[in-house]
Image (cartoon, rainbow, N blue to C red; front, top):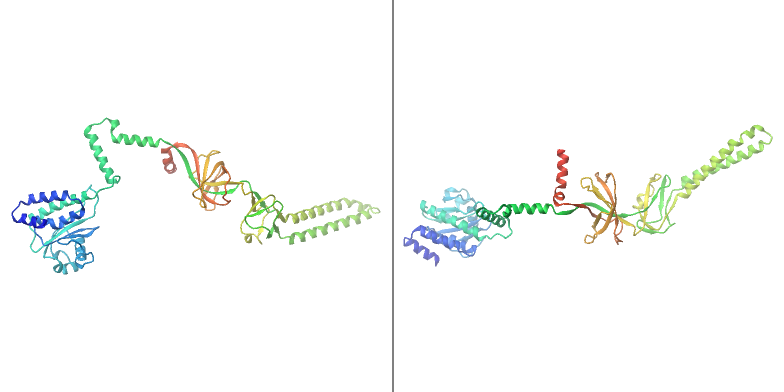
Length: 460
């Protein structure tokens, strides 16, 4: 009915500008984008006659056709129109303006003459997809008709931008409110302390002066606080282990044995040498009763006996130390026994540790670039990977004075922290430790790393 009314108005000789004003009024008062689509493809006939009309947007594809209530997206006509609209230049068009399949199938789908009116988003407006209105008929398009329809499409562009409501806190909405506020302040000539720019600058400066805790994240784990280190008392080969990893042991329980075959053979040789030296001494002692020369050899033979006896006692002690026992109650912490058995070890090499179950503390590795002043008693929180919802709190006990090499090739400072209370987590669990330093302004907390990198690069 609306289309018939518009055609009747055009047929009675109504001024085109009056018709354009009436169409613009309708476009400004539409409630939904669907209504605007219908007005674009059907109401435009009041400005210039045409046979077919199509509305296309890059994101919505062909969204409206003249005389059609519901569009079938998979229809051949609609798919062909989508390819045409995606390549159509602005202005009057014919089949000669295209090539290939579009030009060959033009006569099958459209009349001879077409007009493509782009609907791009204006600069500084709410962003929208590229689109356009396609009008076709059997007669060429006149210049005054093209001008009138171009103005109509500019009205549609503003109407489509108005239908897209930005979110209250979107960048576009915030920018619009900011510009409105600046224009209001400029027109009202407010004092400098009431201007929005000054207030924002003062607010930012105040926020940057708020004191915050200087914190650093570092890899950490639970380690024994004062374990008993079991080291190799001699050079030899481990023969067997009597305990398993993480096994509870009592004081005096056997832990491991060294291979004693070589020690036993050396002890037997030393014992035989001692017996030989004692026999020589007794023989010289009997001869000294009649031979003064033999009396002079007694002192050297006695020294030789003491030497052999000391060597024998040493080897006997080594044989006794080849069987290692637990020095106290605790948990045996060491690697896979199969990696130790049969491997030669040096004197003093650590084999395992005996740790008390409840004697646990936090060990963290503070990177060289993240090093901050940490005093004894600084707060530390360890967030374990096995229990991320419950932090283990501790107090810093000491920080190493020099950086130590790590397995990954980097250097870091060792940090040890005493737990605030007992924990049910076992030794060896790893996580992330948050180390808290002194209070600093928020500006220093934000710019500490950039300033340090800048000074290292520039040297100022």
